[in-house]
Length: 185
Image (cartoon, rainbow, N blue to C red; front, side, top):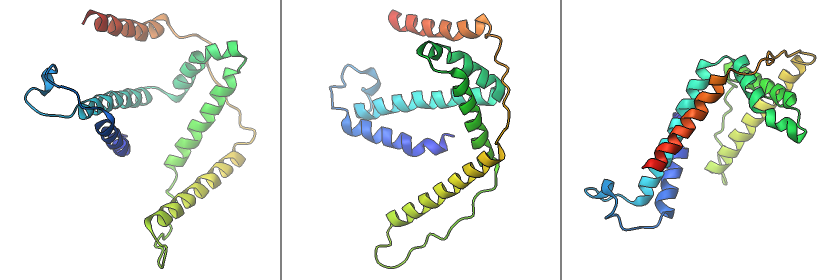
């Protein structure tokens, strides 16, 4: 998953490098021996936090069954019922979307089209546009076929029991522990 985000990380690094103003780095102990731009340091901090989030989400998705994940989202969406929104519809759409993505990723890859455009005006943008439109047409066709197959399909969610107290208390405890540690330093 990290390899898919490498260009995103590079763009964050470049933007922080270009946008962060130069400041005196005499007070910063990490840059006493090496002259590094504050923008690079800030960008690396943001990339580090994003990498940790990606690892946490990957671990969460690998360790949970789809029904457990949907049940957790059902309970997290409880405040939406106060706004008049049906959380059951949200969970149903999420389950259908996750099923479609899983089916699309497990299906055979679409046939590659020959994108070699020749002649005047054949540039990288025309090839890129052609490739994107071809992919989007295939995704749309897949979604339509998947929708026709699933007409009348019944989804059953076992979301009747609320989560245990420790499942709510443990993340909140970690949050308060981090806030307290930040206040003490």
